[in-house]
Amino acid sequence: MARHDLSIQFTPRNPARLLDRFLAEVGQGFNAYPDRQRRLQDIAELEALNDAELAQIGIARVDIPAFVYRDLLG
Image (cartoon, rainbow, N blue to C red; front, side, top):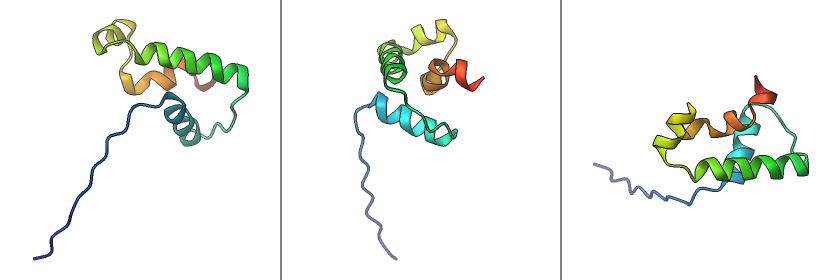
C-alpha cells in the first residue's frame, strides 16, 4: 500500500492577498490605489471583529470582501 505524506501549512491572514484573490475570481481586475487602500482598511477593521460582532452586522467572515465591495458587485 502506498503511503502519502501530507503537508498542511496555515499562513496568517493577509487581507491584501484575500482581496486580490476575491477580485480575480469575480473578474474585477482593477485596484485603483486610493480606493484599494480605503477598502483594505475596511477589510482589516472587519477582520479584527470576532464572529459574533460580524454576525451582528449580518455577515460571515468569508463574506468580508464581498461586503466591502458590495457597491461594485451588486
